[in-house]
Image 1 (tube, helix red, strand yellow):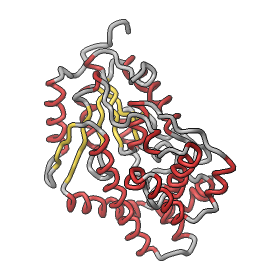
Image 2: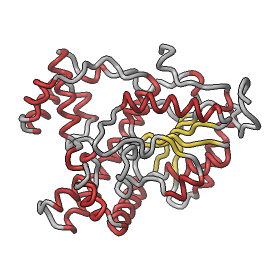
Image 3: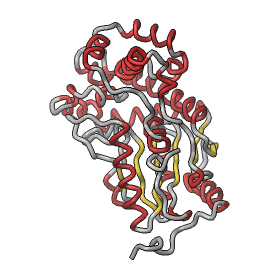
Image 4: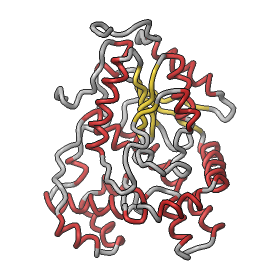
Amino acid sequence: MDSQSTPPSKGLALAPVLILGPTASGKSAVALELAERLGGEIVSVDSMQVYRGLDIGTAKPSIVEQARIRHHLVDVAKLTESFDAARFVILARAAVAAIQARGQVPIFCGGTGLYFSAWLGGLGSAPPADPTLRAELAMTPLESLLDELARRDPVTFAEIDRHNRRRVGRAVEVIRLTGQPFSSQRARWGEIPADLAGRCFGLIRDRSDLHERIVRRVDEMFAKGLVEETERLLGIGLATNPTALQAIGYRQVAEHLGGLRGICETKELVKIRTRQFAKRQLTWFRGQMDCEWIEVGRTTETSEVTDTLIQHLARKKISRPTGPPAGIS
């Protein structure tokens, strides 16, 4: 791993901590408490929380939570802007440097595997977009793209969100441009640098417990006004942003508002898509990230999980900083 792709750290005590896992696993609550107990700030690793306005459907940290602990990489992009892993890496590196300069611990928390990968190991060697080919692929039925992807890159086919046309199209685009599987051109996903060994944690729950939490979360989102939020955002840029519109919840609600299905069917579809997404996240993380996996029980308190993480960190001599790192006043 070259020096440009190695996450910065200023001493063992201030090296970043990584908390990852599937949606609804309880990552955010643990990150908040860990940040309080270690003296840290949170770097969100969520490809949709970066967009201003995508609040309810992304379970974005509330104003109270953001006042409790400083958050980074939240609300950093307009709905009309594009945002990708390359921009995430630039902003994440700047956030880490600023956090450590204040004598705090950067705590990365989220479920976007690509962003974790890009920050840890670089962006890989995939070529830039080809406008002509991309336009051709946009006219190709999704089923045909999936058939091609399955034939030419079964590894990516097994991992990718098959309902996400943009990502499927990009994978096929790279394969056609290079003649090589998309999976072979990614960065060294999951490699943990030596200075982060022992500081990457994944949260895992029993399947039925996770599914129940997903159902509750989706019901709460609709109760809080997901439909109204989506309707408002469609009028100010969401409809023209293919990346943001792929967010689970918003895409299904937008289809509901367009008359494709009723509200009850929409709620159930969001739950199904969220469960499928959580499964893909878990499969990807467990297969690609070298983490310490923490089993969280149905009745396990957030404080208990945090205690476990701190015990693991203590073995690496990670403790609450008592002052700024050397050279910073």
